[in-house]
Amino acid sequence: MDRKAARNVYQILDSQYPEASTHHRAGAPPFESLIATILSAQTTDKSVDEVIGLLFSQYPTPELLAEARIDEVEKIIHKTGFFHMKARRIIDASGMLVREYGGKVPDTMEYLLMIPGVGRKTANIVLYHSFGKQVGIAVDTHVLRLSQLIGFSNYSDAAGVEQDLIALFPKKEWGKLTDLMISHGRKICIARRPKCEVCSIRQLCRYYSGSFIK
Image 1 (cartoon, rainbow, N blue to C red):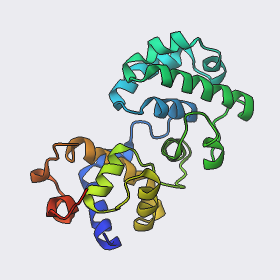
Image 2 (tube, rainbow, N blue to C red; image 1 turned 90 degrees about the vertical axis):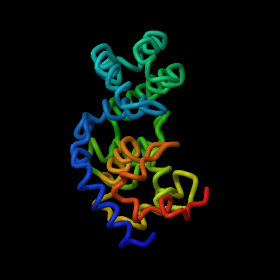
Image 3 (cartoon, rainbow, N blue to C red; image 1 turned 120 degrees about the vertical axis):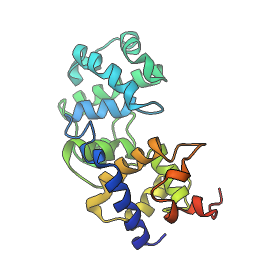
């Protein structure tokens, strides 16, 4: 897809999902954003929202979470799924924040990627929503899938998709692009049952045109 067509897709989605500009974690404290994003893997925002308040009421700082008993953390985050792995990751991440960064979440990609459980997706989300920095594009499962279907990218891996999106869209739109595509993926372009008949971008979509080859 060329930049003009990609721009049209962006503008249509931007008008369709005005709530994407007020993402519910926009402006969240960096530590909350970091932990919530780690917990969000393979689950819904609703599941994370249901546990995050209790988690931070008991462990509001990296220092406290770093010293938490893993079984107690597992009980709190159980409904987010993969709770054994996630509990270990957020405790380990908190420990590194305390040991290496004075209990503060770093505001650079380089240092965020050194934290256990943090990849480019998580780092991009934290940088955008908590620090207002757009250094890359967060590619979650929705962004990956929609990028292939719509025709933004032919890559099947997050790194390749991110580079294609960076080439298609101006930097000022990188952060919001993720939120727009997530909104569309949840409401219309649903995995295994996309609602093409009501999709606002179907005339620009490779999948709808029948030219998508998996």
